[in-house]
Amino acid sequence: MEMGGEGRDGDITGDVEDFATYLDLEGKSPQTIRMYSYYVSRFLREGGKLSARSALRFLTRLRRSGYSNRSLNLVVQALRAYFRFEEMDEEAEKLRPPKVPRSLPKSLTREEVKRLLSVIPEGRKRDRLIVMLLYGAGLRVSELCNLKIGDVDLDRGIITVRGGKGAKDRVVPIPASLADMIRDYIASRSDDSEYVIVEERRRKKGKLSTKTVWYLLKRYGEKAGVEVTPHRLRHSFATHMLERGVDIRAIQELLGHSNLSTTQIYTRVTVEHLKKAQEKAKLLEDLL
Image 1 (cartoon, rainbow, N blue to C red):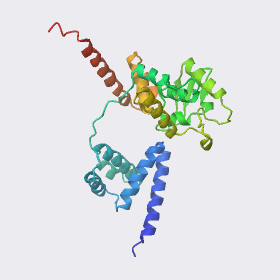
Image 2: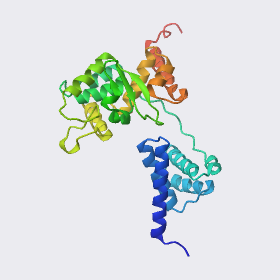
Image 3: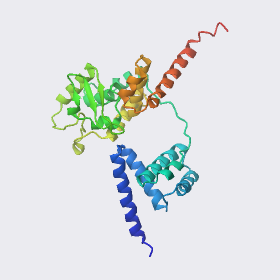
Image 4: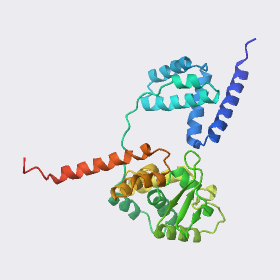
């Protein structure tokens, strides 16, 4: 006897919830878990089976509906993860993500960072600290929001980032000026939150949300005439460190990248920067 729609939906929901728990134990970020779960749920609800052929038919439908290679790549990663969760490793290996051109990360100039800070009032200690932790310590926005007071050693100038990408802890040194900013901000608060940065609105007390960070950067960025996001500040941190001669392996450690190849994209950024500077100088223009 064929199972009714309600029973099937219940099974799918249970499977996806188990899959989400598996991803969490694997150390995936909440955003990755949310996106993977969405696509796997959609795949199953549209009749998807545990086979690469069934997955390819699903991907074909998405492509025909207008999905880009970049979006399809995310769907493939989600389905591969689900197949492995179901111990269908061979089928997972048959799924190949479409080629996606790897774009260079965009970073701000030092002058743009200064301009951004200039529009944040001195009295907005929290907002200035948000920018400085993203740019001065290279934190991901999720790491910034999850940073606890107990993970900051202000005397030694060290931040311990707990459970970064891949559930890996890392230690990030910070300059004395940034340690002073953290100390000053925490001292100005009257709450007893364990988090370094908190929400200020009455309805949203407690840990800072990533949505708040994006909103603040958008607002201040518009005032400064600068396109800025949390990740762009992190990119700027890495790019400016490399431009100033910091060893790429040290930058890899600071960013928490598992593979050096991920960090090496910044060498391409600095090469582009140098090429533009050379073209601007026009040293050979009068010689050729």
